[in-house]
Image 1: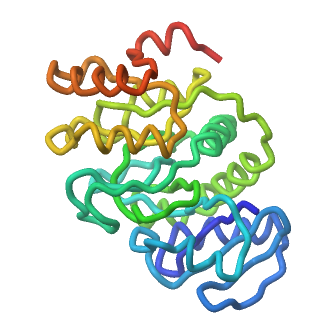
Image 2 (image 1 turned 45 degrees about the vertical axis):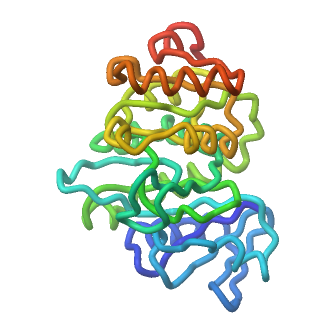
Length: 277
């Protein structure tokens, strides 16, 4: 089962949940750790706590439910108030400022993220004031061993409550679950800003998807151990670097990991040129 997790403390999460219920017509029942909405292959778990603090949620819910993937339906907050849809994997590098633990990474769901992005891309003309962007790995929960990712509406209360935005995310989640295509190239991304513009272009227009992405602002704490861990749990066969933001020290670090693990390191411009959809 694919489990979509929503929080009672998250306005955007509630917005998306309401549309999911309308679209799926699930059966509702109360469990120990959540309110569960059963729609067969897709379930919705509504929890009390904020999603970013839901470490080990999968092990708790698996005491009562059988699922193999988590899709966190969430809000995105930013001071600039941009109108965006975002997706990313959760986890932390050196610090854990917003949930999770330092140097801890949730297991990604790169195929679902890819299929969601392609479904969402087709719906963006319905909300022309919104754009889509990936984000890099940042907040918690980091202690999630079931494949997972965040699917978000940003960035203020106005957008979180937007009914059309909530419906687009709900529809895209459902379509991504129904989409059986899985033959994507999986990479870990290194470099760029928080909103990962080159990774965003790559996931929308090439045969690549991503597990974890590490922004330039994490480079001081980035090390070979966490890059190797990201590659392992992402099931990645490539590392893609944002060559415009990587200096020689980090490039050597990534190259050493690439050589040690025997996986290919690619520049983003090469991927965009040679792996078009």
